[in-house]
Amino acid sequence: MATANTVQDKVICPKFEQTFAILGKKWTGLIIDVLLDGPRRFKDLSQSISGVSDRVLVERLKELEKEDIVTRDLDDSCEMKSGYCLTEKGKSLKNVMTEIQEWADQWICEID
Image (cartoon, rainbow, N blue to C red; front, side, top):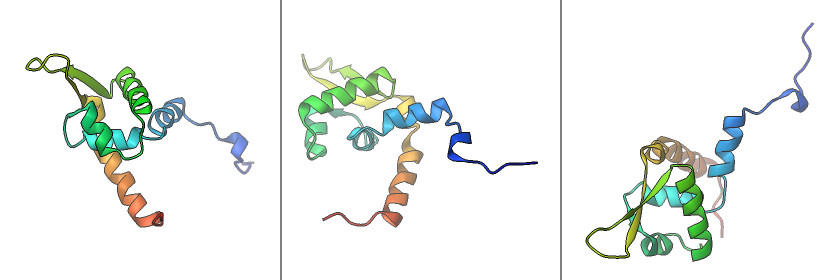
């Protein structure tokens, strides 16, 4: 005899949970979204994402580098300048980001 599933019966896939632990942090989605348009220098990222502090932006970029979603490349033409870009793993989030934006457009009310 089958029993009704309860919340306690559900087991969240560890990979699913880890994905949300990475992508669910504040600013992470916006960083990825900006980088989907192409590489950016830190200053450009900071200016593109209104409200993020430089400290938090650095922290998120390091986390994304650790997860191999973002990479930091040094610019050989200009000493001490670097840019950030998505890795192949990061670029593979494009469809996910598009779907999330479409869902938000349909279901999230405007915030004043």
